[in-house]
Length: 171
Image (cartoon, rainbow, N blue to C red; front, side, top):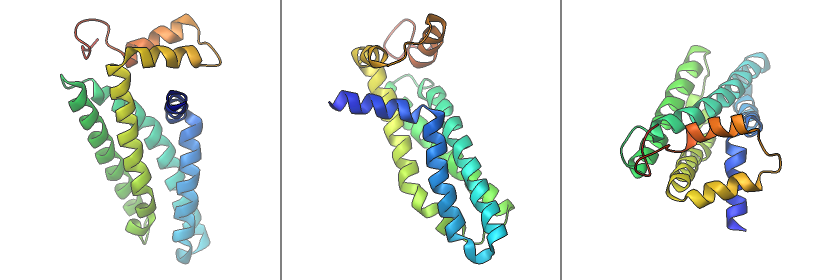
């Protein structure tokens, strides 16, 4: 049961649907918090926050996968992946909100801090678990309802797992 939940969570965090859904929640929050600036400006802030949330989520997943493989140990890779993605996320969010004139940047970003930190920690932990337990990765592939073509699965293997050497060897 727990493995099934973690596999579903992993697929949702890796999907564009999960990014759009999370971005929608954040965009609506940004719209509501900044409504005192006038609805047209609040709508621009909400749309910008939605677009940034989707792009940052998809980009940070790729960034976290890349950062995870840089250090020699998987634990350091997980720490670097989580920290690097959070640094990039909040640098971009604060910069763009400053540029578009968001009046309450801290209030706009505050509710998303815990989910964003949670996303970074959980996703890097899932990467760590995937590396440490090859059986979990195999069961994830077996439980997918739509089997992927061999070429796509091979490309996924190149991104998500070491090809040779020790368990954290870089391809």
